[in-house]
Image (cartoon, rainbow, N blue to C red; front, side, top):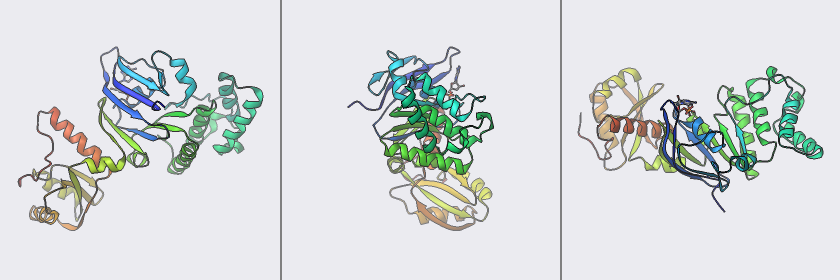
Amino acid sequence: MAAAIEVRDLEKEYPQGTRALRGVSFEVERGELFGLVGPDGAGKTTLLRILAGLLTPSRGSVRVDGIDVVQDAAAVKERIGYMSQRFSLCETLTVLENLLYASEIWHLRPQQRRERIAQLLRFSRLAPFQNRLTRNLSGGMKQKLALSVALVHHPRILLLDEPTIGVDPLSRRDFWLILYELLREGSTIFLSTPYMDEAERCSRVAFLLDGRLIAVGSPAELRKSLPVVVLDLHCADARLARTRLSQLSRFAHLAPFGEHLHVTIPREGVDPKEWVEAAQAAGVGVRSWRVSEPSLEDVFLFLAANRAREQAGLPGAPSAPPTLG
Ligand code: ADP
């Protein structure tokens, strides 16, 4: 069976000249929860809109459920549930009316329609609010309604564009429970998110930066792929520590996390204790320290910094122990 999503050498250039996607290639297997992660402007919405058949690529090929999106967008639309950031809901209709409207668009027969809507209202826990006007719903409820609307026609592949943006933490958790339920039922979920904690929950993740994929893999693979581990320093004064360490070239990648400072150090061939001693010698008050695998955020920061160095014509971050700065 074909992969759920297959993207090859995808390029998108907007008429004004912005190159939103540059040579993007990846595959999503059936049943995966695949996360597209990147900062604002990275190209996430552009990619999702192309996958949904709403935007034409400039070059490259895109197949969803084995179908070429450019040649047969209509057939693709029947197979996917697409949830845009704007939630495509009619604010002046009630919850139930929005679902009825979607079921009419998909030409569900009356019997099917009743069953499916009842099922979705149960599933999204929106049944008690079915007669409420959409404009009076909370952000979390609107989000669940938008997902339900995207599911009316039983799609097996879901494309969700930053579905949890602007939603409170409890509703976010609720929404994720619904996504897990959909996965158990056999759906494939492709979602974009700017949140690393959400990326950690995905079976595989793709990092997008300036329209380029800079890494694809499971969270564990991405962590292991780095030639570095994280030295987690608990500092008396993290800001001062950062200033001091940034003056030493061996502490090239610094990321503050509250009172902690994460410093990437080579995975192989170095003694972390020696690095802590170097930090102490630089005037950093280290209260305690430990070595850990990088988080996905660390991985992203590392790869993004490497990319910036390359673009500036500097060598990438050292994978071997560097000399003391
Ligand atoms: P993301 O979803 O990651 O924030 P987008 O796909 O929205 O990124 O945008 C990627 C780049 O393409 C940005 O530089 C953005 O300004 C540009 N862009 C997005 N939509 C359009 C458009 N319709 N016309 C021109 N440029 C666009």
